[in-house]
Image (cartoon, rainbow, N blue to C red; front, side):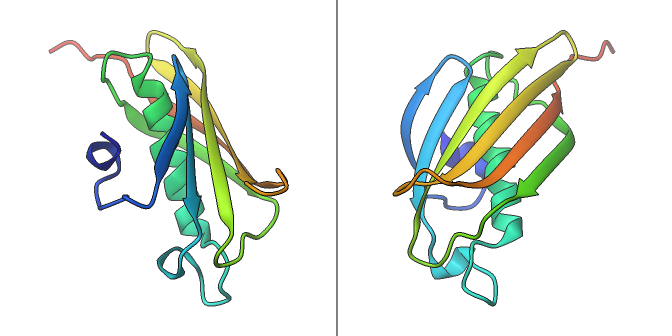
Length: 128
């Protein structure tokens, strides 16, 4: 299911927990996911916020992934090559037209916050 949401092969991501409105994943920071300094790339972080929050949303909306309206990401701490990270996404609210989600990306070993994101998605159905 994760591959269907994200597109490319994301077999490096392991779903470790989930419930209605929630999705928790773990992954190791590999070379492919880093920038030229060997740290988790900002674009990878944005992709994780987008994809994993959508996974959390899918547990609430009968497989309606919606369309992104806004994403905001605060990059707080770096995650070097080889580190293990946890992506914890939660659905805050799903209304008639919009869904509001939040994502915390933390270091698996010490729990320190690496990045925090918010994601707003349009989930309303238009009438034809």
